[in-house]
Length: 232
Image (cartoon, rainbow, N blue to C red; front, side, top):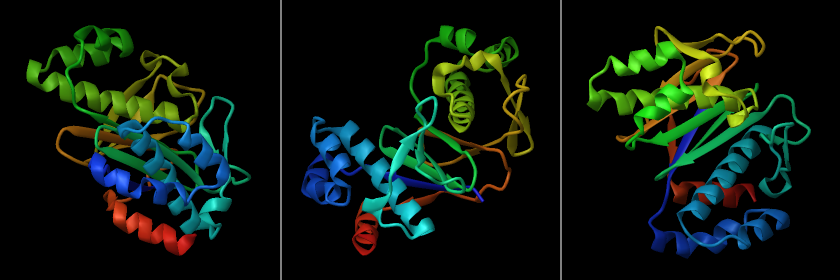
């Protein structure tokens, strides 16, 4: 089954109080990598994403968080080294960091709603998708644009292509509460689902199975740190 987790960023002053504690749960290489980064929200997003993934993988595999080794696929997609039955994917935007876990390749994308240049839809979406957006009222287009973007991005992340492939090279079509891919004959069958996470955000998950969890599991930072302490 596809599991989906989310964690909300701490206020900057609270993050400073636990920053060093968070680094202590990482192996030396990862600590050094994060130590070279400047402080700020981007660092917290990246750090929470890595810790959340390590914690979830440790629960699944019984491997210590510090002993988990990440590798990268042919197109740079992070993966668990040496494993073929534990897959994960991370995304973050604004105040949220999300992680999907499954026994098969998985993709997840979260985006904060924000003003969108109308020309982007014509550039990145198929003619049918662009026409569908144009048929909406102006105040609906931003929400639908971000929804479509997250769905497409989650598919590209699931197949390990990221933005190395054009978003207008395939279409996303609804089938009930699930979405499917059309116009793509090379990647196999994939299913996509939108998950509610927070007002002002949209999130999508893609997998080669429609066995999705019912809802997102939201985790507090304090709870994660306590869990990591037990796993350390």
